[in-house]
Length: 378
Image (cartoon, rainbow, N blue to C red; front, side, top):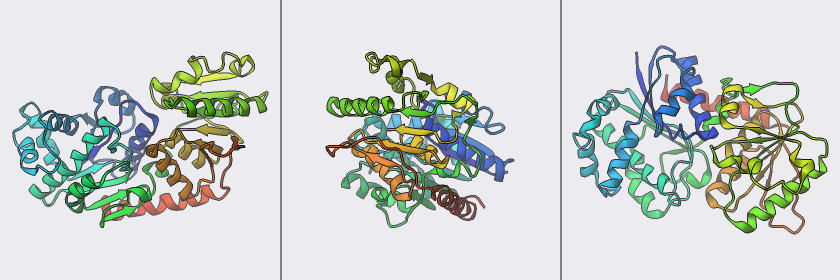
C-alpha cells in the first residue's frame, strides 16, 4: 500500500479549492482506493467535515503549513536551504512525528490552485513549499514530488530565479495558464477541476425549481469597478423579469454581500426573486443547476464548472491581474463565456457558451487523467 501526501489550501472554505480536493479524492477512490491518503491543509478541522465522506480513512493534517508559518516567523529567506533543512530536521519538535510521516510518503503532491502570489501575504509564504519538497526529494531521491494545475501569478523575477532550482527537482510540474509557464520543466495543462466531470465529482442539486440565473460576485474593493458591475448586473436582471435568481457563496462569508447587503434595496422586483445558497448548502446538497441556466461570476471555478455543465455565462473582471489571468486561461481553453471588464462604452452582460466546449473539455480531461496515470500514479 502506497502513501500519497497531498498539499492543498482547502478548508477555508472556498468552493474552488475544496472542489480541487474533492476531484483528487474521487480520482484516488477510483484508481488507488486501497492506498493511504494524507491531506495537508491550513484548516484541518473544517477540512475534516468537508471531506470525511470523500475517501476512506483519510488523514488530514496541517504539518507543512505549520512549517511555512514557522519559516516566515523565523525570517528564513526562500534561498536559505540550510535553515530550511534544519527546520525539517528537528527545527519544529512539536511536529516531529508528523514531519516523519511526510518523509515516509511515497509521493508529495501540490494540488492545483492559485495559492501563490506576491500580491497576497498569505500566498507569498507558500513559495516555501517548493523549497521544502525539493529538500525532501534530495534527502529521499525515491520520493516523487509533483505539482498539478498551479497558478503562480502575480510573481516577480526574483522569486522565479530563486525557486527555479527547486522546481527543476520536481518529477512533474504542471501549471494551468501561460503566464505561469515560467520553468523549463513545466507542463502547461488544464486546471485540476477540469477532471471533475469525468470523475463525477461535481455535486449537483437537480431540483425542479432551481433558479434560472446563478450569480457569484465576490467583494469588489475598487469603488468605481464595483459601481459599474452592480449597475450592469441590475440592468441584466431587470431584463429577465420573471427569472428566479440564485446567489452563490463560493467563499465564506465574503460572497454573501450581494444578498445580505443593500445592493438591491432600491430594486424590490429583483430582491424578491433572490435565493441565497450558502457555501455549506452548495457543498452538501450540490449546485442548483438546470438546463438553459445563465451564470454570471467573478469566481474562477464557477466560470469553469458552469462551462463544464454547458451553461451560458459571463465572467466578470474585478480589475486585478490575479483574477484576470485565471479567467483568461479558461477563455484560452475555449469555454466560450463572455469575459466582461466593462471598459467599452456600451459594455453589457451577455452570457455565452462555446457549444463544443463540453466535447473539448472531456478530451482535455481525459488527456490529463491519462498523463496522471502514466507519469504520477501508475
